[in-house]
Image (cartoon, rainbow, N blue to C red; front, top):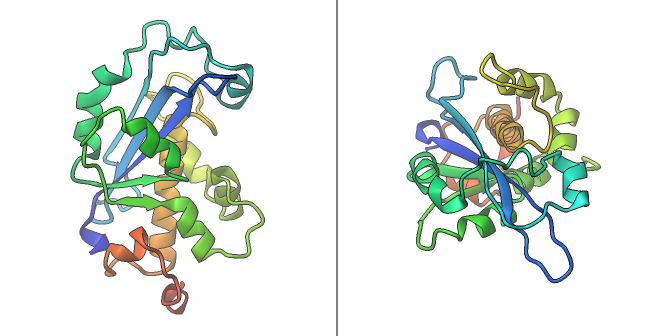
Length: 208
């Protein structure tokens, strides 16, 4: 059941693609939550790391996330982050908003076995079919979730104020959006398949 599950959201920011090149990750963020924790809005774990890359960060990518080569000066290579990633994702329901990028970058660890996956983009489209924009920031803005996301992201341990397109901020936003949908449609006692393969015809009957 959803109530008994543990969810870990993951988000990557990337170096961007240039002509003839392939994209590489430059930042990862994760946030973990379970409906059974008390208080119910508490996150049990948050984590962020920059990731070393030999590729130049494109100008377009920098305009999106603001990450420069200075942020990556002492960053570890992706393979060295495997223990941290494994500890946070293995055995949990993995959450991402538009999970294609996250799945692609995690293929650096073949046979990792992470999942099942919940895509909050698919959930939001099914749950709120009349929204004009399904980017993570736009959905959370329309549902008035930004204040909560910012409060959870910017704690006393945060060195600088986080915002959209920071991997930690976006992973927390995915968890907050997921939690909102679960609570808004009274899904706590439903099977996890309602999230992994969303069919929301029954949700609307229970909407609070």
